[in-house]
Length: 70
Image (cartoon, rainbow, N blue to C red; front, top):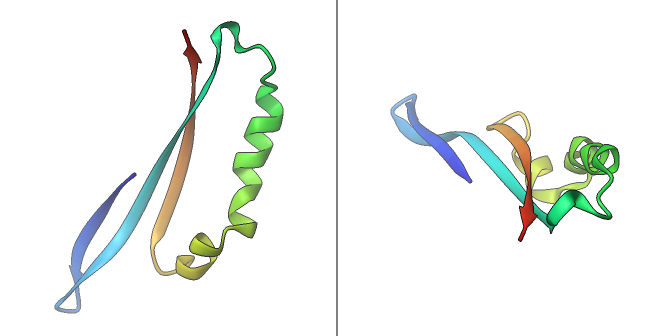
């Protein structure tokens, strides 16, 4: 996770949060359906209480990296 802090109207504010998810899978990706994982990532924000609390106030983004666990 990383973010940005900026002065807004003479007050320091968190202006952006970037989340980087890492999903470790068995070598070869056995058992991982990428479409299912992508759908979950696209829709989770609708049910995430933290995101719903800051939505519209802080620019939030997220991405996913799938890595093979050797």
